[in-house]
Length: 207
Length: 158
Image 1: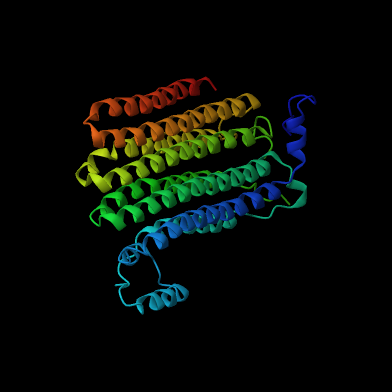
Image 2: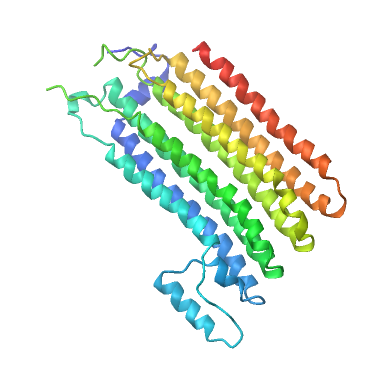
């Protein structure tokens, strides 16, 4: 068994005693929890600006809202009963970028949890098992926090996109280009998370 | 298994955290830069829609920071292989420091690109100072690239 460097290094002695399954579970939870937090944060930033601007320019809700879900369809139908709004369910744009962030988190969390293998209790604190636990933990942190900042970024840009679209409808597509750059950040997180999860190799069971 | 795995047990923890820091902090910087410049572009575009496509430069520069973080994170995480090459605490700490260096440099460059880009695009709408703020944003991006190259040079020392 490889020896840790000296007893004075308290990080090592503390870390060796924590089960790798703790790290893995926390990593998977962070992957999905923090990603969804980012998506929700982005959606509410965009949504509040969008709904506020739509008071004077109701046409912007048709391009910017996603709504294939039932509750939103109801909201839109009640809006369309008002005399001068032209709400039609056309191509959704802005909110989909925020929602994609949550979907990335779900995908990576599912991939990470399929990487978990059970190991007999005599082998839990072997170096290889510890490394697998650390890999899943780091992968979860990467995906979670990258998606958090991506969701925030896309939300802020989406809100300014809605506001500028309300003034000048030719701006919508141009600002959408900026939003595509923003949503690439979540994709980077997913790529690195999946590459790192390939390092999570548990030791073969020795009976 | 113990014979094929050489090195310290907890060293991969610091190595993987280094890769995580590289990507997460660079993405934070890229997100700040993209969002802040994007808001500036959208505000400016209301008055001068024809300048919007020319003002995408700070957004692109900020996006590139995310790519730098991705490169370093992948290099670090594929370098942690205790079975092929022994991985001591030294290597773990080296990876942690290079990841933190790249990530925090990306964070700072991204924040600077955001603020400069925001002010630059708004000023560009009033006076045609295109070259001025472009040079600043490009310098900020290059600063981060220099740090990236230093890290790649230090890497073979492990």
